Image 1: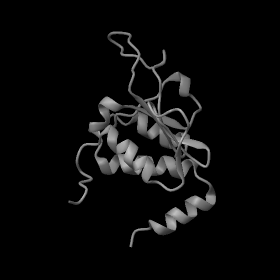
Image 2: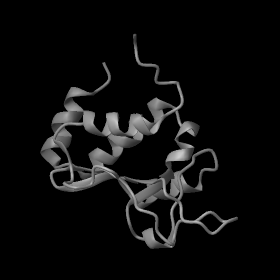
Image 3: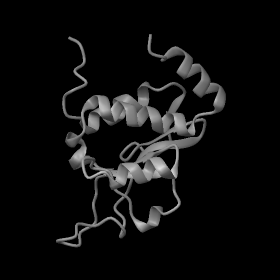
Length: 141
C-alpha cells in the first residue's frame, strides 16, 4: 500500500521521517523524548515541558512540544506568522533558528508537509557534503 502524503501527520510520522534521513542518530538516553541528530547536531527534538510554552487558559506547561530547525530567521518568521500553520515560537527561542509545534496539532499538517519540514530541518544541520549528496539523489526528474 502506497503512503498517502495527504493524510494528517502524526507523532509516529515525526519519528519515521527523522530516522529515514541519512546519518541520523538518536542522542543517547533521550528515547522517551528523542533528540534526532545528524553529525552530532540536533535537527528535530521533543522538548521537556518548560515555563515559556504554556496553555494560555490554564497556565499549564505544554508537554508535547517538538522543535524543528529551520534554514533561516526569515523562514522561521514566515512559518510562525502564517496563521494557516500550527508552528509557533517563544521568547526563549529568539535568535534560535527553530520553530515549535505541539504534537497535538500535527494533524493540521499533511504527512507530506511534515516530511518537507523535517527534510528542511535535516538540510539546515547536515554537513555541506551530506546536503550535496542528499540533494543530488532527491532532485525532481
